[in-house]
View 1 (cartoon, rainbow, N blue to C red):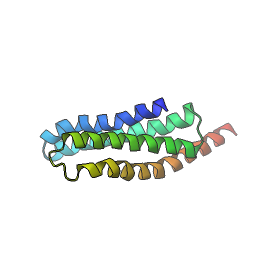
View 2: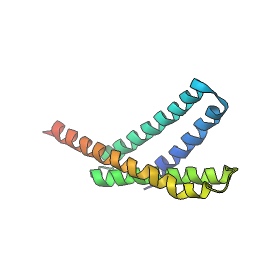
View 3: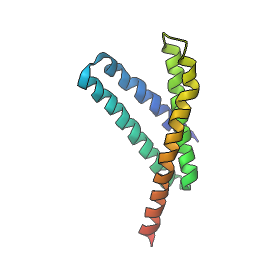
View 4: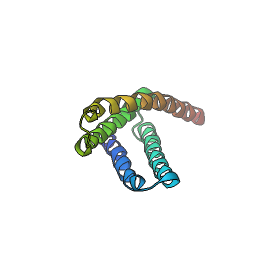
Length: 127
């Protein structure tokens, strides 16, 4: 669980850190910063799936739930940051609900088959 929280904290740190130079950039440079943030987040996601499979030896469903949970917590933390720093307070509280829901479901949908594939590949390499 501690590791899941570590992974969860990485997502908003990446989002906020990469947004700083992206917000002051224009055009392709802005796109580059946003793409870099997306790639670092995707790498974090992949490493977390691998960690759950190889290190924790969790079955695919449990691994996917842990990964999706970390994504949801990270999205919630980012939503808290948005609420604290938002100049338009009207819709910002919705982010506390929407960010975790909109990120956790796709994360689970990707993590579960990925963990299943890792399990199949591991079984094939053993036999």
